[in-house]
Structures are given as structure tokens and as C-alpha cells.
Length: 59
Image (tube, rainbow, N blue to C red; front, side, top):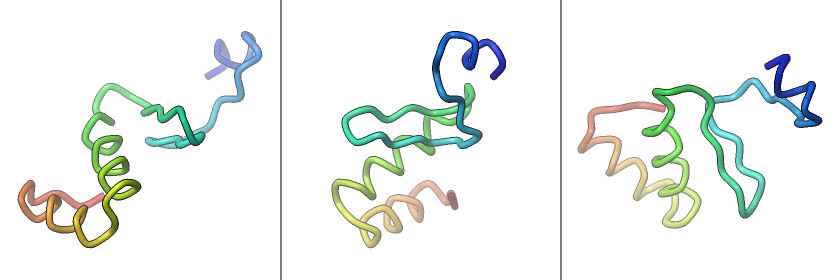
């Protein structure tokens, strides 16, 4: 995080950061979190909940 700050970036302690047209995930294992976030953003909470049930995964 210190290195990011030194480059002029604004580090945010979150697994998913959505800046409109740019979505990033914090950490190697955050891919599923980013995927579920995008599903919810595009298709809604009801659909992401159904996908979570398929994965048996809670955000």
C-alpha cells in the first residue's frame, strides 16, 4: 500500500473498488468478489444472490 501511495495512487483498503469504468480487486483471492460485484452491478441483487447460492458463497 505504501508503494501505491508513493506512485500517486490513492490506496483503498477494500476487496473490490468500483470507479465506474474501472473495477479492481484487492488481493489474489478477490477474483470471485469482483465477479459477484459485476454481476450485481449489471443484473441486480436477486441474480447475484442466485449465483451465490450456486457457489454456496456469501460476500
